[in-house]
Image (cartoon, rainbow, N blue to C red; front, side, top):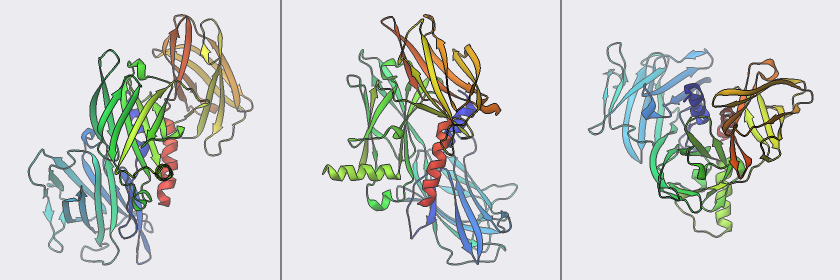
Length: 456
């Protein structure tokens, strides 16, 4: 697995809501920044956690206060921090940092009491680090994923004895991904390993129906208006082996509580994991409101959970879309004929667009490359005069299996993106099942979610 690509996707949803406690309640991932008005000065406070705590070498809670006016970290900051999970207190203590950068090193244990190891000052009893002793949080912390609730107050700034009052309490609800494993069975009774990754809450009641080619699972969820109004996004992942051909289809139909989701809610990713397909459920706030309203219209009893269904579909929707890693370029791709036969030309039709505007980019140069088993089988260079163009290629009888369509050096920038293609023989025909795998499309979604998030 390519670590760089994996890290890029892991940053797909690095969000968390940090806002005054008396106004809103939020859920999110990993990192966010809020503004505090201190005597006319703008102080930003960020909270950060590793998104995958069990996979992180540095298990650190990082909280930073930054002085926008001075363009540097605030000095001599004391935080009052409370951390809670499932309405239970993990800790609530003062922490002091002379340079505005607080690091709490977490040492998870399987059991025992939670304790803090560090030095304490004499003013507020705040924990602080020294060269010999960093701040360490020891105990059964983050032994599982889910939602973690921070309550944060700023109590000193500028000078160690400059105690401030009534700046408000801010909250951060940070979600750490939780991975669970489930076994399904195919039509022959063979075990198929599924892996679920939840960025919101614990997954339960997983089932795979081989007759219907259908995955179902549940997750606790509060459907109240107050809760939904401050949730930027819900993100769940279904992982399964690429060799499980029965479920390896061009697209999927996703539902929540029986309500059919939009195409943009169910995203196929064949690029991040070498041997696994990942199907992402992405539900932004508007989607949650839509599902809730649809449930009301159907007069269905409002539940306290989300019931997800993921059904295999052979429907292909054009165009397929991929993005370059820096979100500068978008490639829309379709092909003709839909069924690719050996010995006949396949026409790959594409448009190069500006991500910011969605407009076609005229006079765009590119390299068009086809790869199989990481080996180039075809390469050509072209020039899209009006932003749209096509390339043709004839697959041979021996060219079946996973195939990559790559666009390289777009507009001489060195930027590239790619699509995955599974060429499958069937009754002497080759059915081309096109799958979106460009990881950088996730980055564009990240920006959209951030814009929505900051409006919350």
